[in-house]
Amino acid sequence: MGITAKFDGVAVTTQANVYFDGKCVSHSVQFADGTKKSVGVILPASLTFNTGAPEIMEGVAGSCRVRLKGAAEWKTYGAGESFDVPGNASFDIEVAGEPYHYICHFG
Image (cartoon, rainbow, N blue to C red; front, top):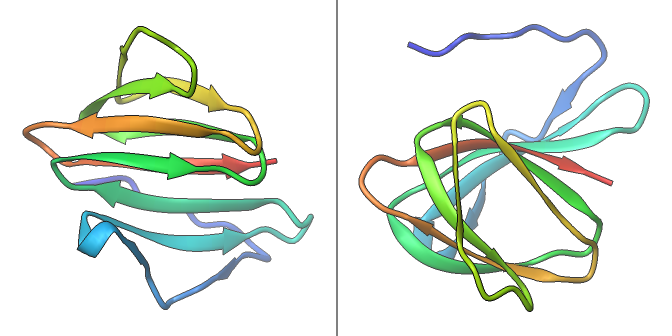
């Protein structure tokens, strides 16, 4: 069972963001200071995401392989690890086996 954290002054969008035919599902969170994050899960799949703002993807559970746009090498990330994605870019992500749970920090 995961850890539940409580934050004061937080708004959560209860309607899920569903991408890639349900292979990625997240919920948007906005903090009182205007900071935005999403909390979600990616099921086993190979996907390409495009970014608007810069992002930090923080792994909570599971693992993934990531290749940033223009990079030749894939890198593996697991729980407790994160990777940065520039704004107006893209990245390929592969999840095999267990789902990859994440927190995406925007901006």
